[in-house]
Length: 450
Image 1 (cartoon, rainbow, N blue to C red):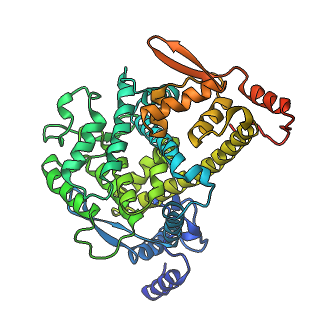
Image 2: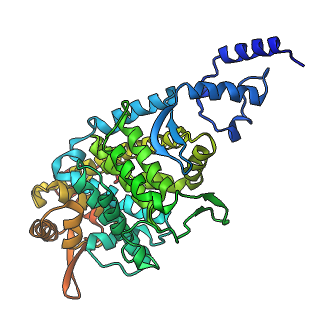
Image 3: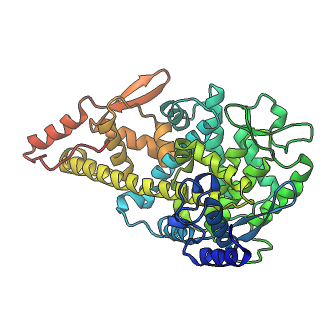
């Protein structure tokens, strides 16, 4: 048994050791920390005390409070600072990649893909079951949703378009409600729950798949004030100190989900507000990434980051670090995707360029379509889908497709009262055959990357 002097000496020695707030580079919760102790000469409880003291020294209070009036905090240990630096470089700077991908003529094509991807996966997180192929075709062709799942995805797509329009504008409770309205219209059993905060008589709780209660949101009579305070935070009002923009966006995501102001649509609204906050802060590349696709792959970690925060002194650092990890993964995936698309476009351009004596110059939209057709011989294109994918006028889209049909790269067919365009049979062989007839080798042309 230690006497008080020995105990004090042991405590002083423990706190002088380089444990810090994130031993071994991990900001672990007690549930995990106790099974991965960095020291052998001290108990788990002693080491946890040292770690908690180091974290508390970094805590910065937030204007967000829990239902009992206790403030939430966040910390910026070295691992968070390093991740924020990577976000700054990856999402706010200039892409070092082929201009074929990022020039104005092709930019909207890649933006469309990311918006559709986010619309689909964000809805799938909430239970939508339509396949990606069907959902993408619905949006491209402008077809009306036929099922509840399709309506969820279509609503999410409309919400992402709405977010793009109000980037840079102040956030208000009215905008938050409008977002939820767009996201949930014609998808709820109770249509009255669309476009309003939940009421006192609506017992809304967050449960897991087994029915275990995970979170009880603040009472409904607090929501008007809490959402107004959230908007003030989003608009950088009343800041006592600088908050890094990516931190603010992550906390905004957490705040809306914690308050759970709506009967339904809270998760989708929270993720939409995250995009708004990042884009408003100048992280332009975030318009091209899908965080929901990453969250969908690790739903348990997503939920755990909320639970760790609530069970450890309202420390939102757990959620912040998880959100930064997700964002960095999405940014890295986008860079890989753009590099792959640059190669695909180059290969298609090279293949068609060598046959230019027959087909003439193709614009970037046509090159992208030819490349897609080379990979997807069963694809179907319409003027409307081409128009939506590339954000061009109807006449421009029609002109693109008609020229490709006249050049023998697409076939124009009648489908009811409309026309569809499909890839020419054996398109790659046709192009390579034209090159061989012209005496041009194709040995350096690699197949399109799939």
